[in-house]
Image (cartoon, rainbow, N blue to C red; front, side, top):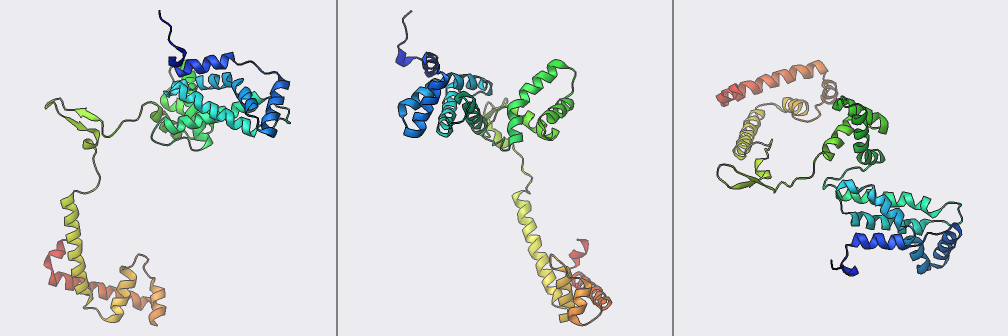
Length: 292
């Protein structure tokens, strides 16, 4: 079989081969390279230290391959985290670079997965992120230990293990159980052979256009009736009705009594008299309002 040229081999394979060919670094070598990069911005030192740790990037990316994203993208994002670790690493601390870089590599890959796994943004808090990346593993372990566990019991135990609410576990479980679907995806019509978009089958809770128009017309008609009736009230009655009945925060009997210089009982009497006057006027002028 004819060998595939190196420049046409899959990018993943080339990256893996380059990583495996890179030499391991002894502790002193690693420290010297880190110092050269930090103090002198020596690009060759940066290249050596990052290439020596690409095995770590590939290993970390492989742990997240089940999320359905290209392995090459996961490796690239892990490499971004590796470079971030190199930029922040302090050689004078008695810590191996691989130990320090592991957190940055994992964080970079996880952030990429959360941004690209679904069009719906999720895992914005640390608790939600832990739930996203651990739910499947914990579910598999629980069902393996006890296949008879109910869904609610599984969600409850996962919630206790991760310190989140069982409701959040149920929502995340539902999200992870299916992929995104476009509302513009066609749905075949078995009878006519034509197809419609999923959006065509969405129902709206809003009233139909003719119902909206009818409501607007009715409201305008009622406003005209009410304005005509209010014109029959004297100024004091009108003020009490407006401030008590026609505002979002109705005035109290006591506050109106103080403003008008009368008792709150007198305000109540005037209000009741004005309401009865309005009722009589509205029914006499517009008999159909009696049925409303």
